Length: 155
Image (cartoon, rainbow, N blue to C red; front, side, top):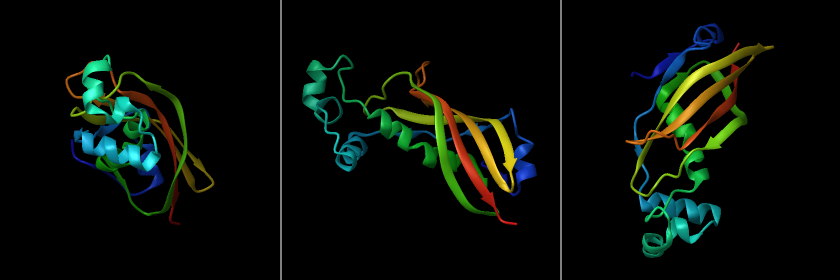
């Protein structure tokens, strides 16, 4: 699916209740997991100790941090939609977030989205995006929830 290009609040609002798109697949190699561990100071062995994980982990592999999966949301979102004529975009909140299953090292993820609701708050667009982060070749998603963004359109 091609990237959705939005140029105004009214154009964005016309997608309320509709699917917005699906991102490309993104691979989660051990190097990315290690870099996230370094950035967050979360070096729990299930994420970074490949040999121990092969033996002791129920997954027989290291797994991505749940927050690593979540942190890829802005990148995946930018592959789905481009909203023009905005002076600022702010993350406003996350709701109903649920981690369904871990992402194993080497797996790939992508995001599907739907515009759950949109409202114009005196020139600020509050968009609630229902999202699902899928794991390639898996039925159960890695993560799902509702992300709320505030778009400040130029006048």
